Length: 581
Image 1: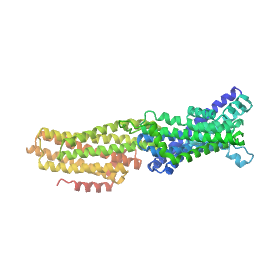
Image 2 (image 1 turned 30 degrees about the horizontal axis):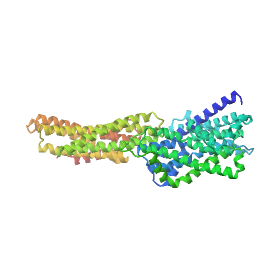
Image 3 (image 1 turned 180 degrees about the vertical axis):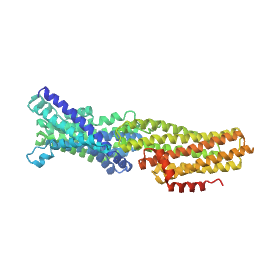
Image 4 (image 1 turned 90 degrees about the vertical axis):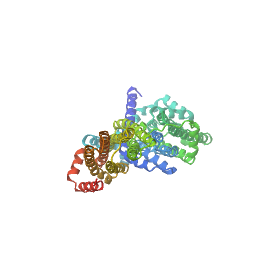
């Protein structure tokens, strides 16, 4: 083995790791919305959680990514610690799929059909198709598909390059002696753990081990302990991701480590006993690509079979390792660890925006109550709601801006932009709630009063504002397009009410029924009602915008108002319902 072989080995390893990362990221983007669907059906049943972890890891080709995702879910409150344990176990089995795919590189046959299964036979075609998709299509979905194909072709080319560059090691005595030393189970396990911890991917380290089998110097006696160590080394990624998280997230990372350490101790002990007592010939035979894949799968399945029935004990162990503190923890609403799977991060953003929406609408509705029945407790609740809405806007705004810099699908990118627009509207609605409260308090402090006619008019427009708030909130909470289409005609009615109420109050002031000071407060209230309706219109418009793929929201609403007979019918219905006569 000369310097050129070493350079080829380095280049092959780089291509292999790059291809695996490229393919994994594209797979995550393509599977993003599917992962959101799976997540919405989370269950506490062991087998369902196990299958979820297995399926997600098989799709995105990385148990490390899955466990980091799980730590983020637990940290954000999406998933309980008990649910996470089942998913982590499934991820350990799902990661074995990669080794089976890589084992295709070891096919050696004169049979043309079997030869066609060897990746070097078809990866050039995949690379050509992937390049065509990337260069000549505009669809983000097709570009992701092209990236997956190119990533797979790159990692298989890197695998083949590594295998070719290390083939000369079989003639070097030092290399042979190295792997003889690794037949000591403890040394082999440590070697596998260290290698995997460094590259932070058990799939990649298994692939490297498969590439080294071409030397014929790696026996099953040396390979199996290395594989066991690789399962421990892969835990480093989840452990690193748990820094700065809440206690349950730390427990989830430690469950992953405990699961692999306990499984390794048990089965490595069994391996050593079998080797000492029976000395099977298999342990001294040279391993190949497929043999490594089989050993990897059997070990992970055996660990799961051993510990899946004991998930409650693992959970108790996690609580022993990370005990509860005296003070309650602050719940983290949003977690940047979820950026590893942008679709899931977006789902968490939407969930948090829903909480903000309910809070903001409730704050405004409470301020409407304050007009007729003010009390200090209600005032404190309204101000608290507005402050919490401000915090939600800061949190969500920062998170969504950072999320928008990730590699999002076209659909997810549009939804992130929609949420950014909507959080501003919801925050302003809560601000108007405080404005209305302050107008009521000014009336109270200055001992100002409205006439009975003015109070009746206020009750009419307040009822209309209450309904438009309910419609816009329902449209957002449930993606209810019917509710969204009702918002715009009602907003037009509220605009008309505002103008009529302002004119009526001017007449009352001219006749001396109301004071000028009361008139200023009246004008402020009407402005807050009208602007609240405007924000509701923006929210409903965003929902319709997403549904109809309209790029110019204002043009779309203008078109609906001017040409839709259905809009005119709904407008007339609301005009009758909120008539001042």
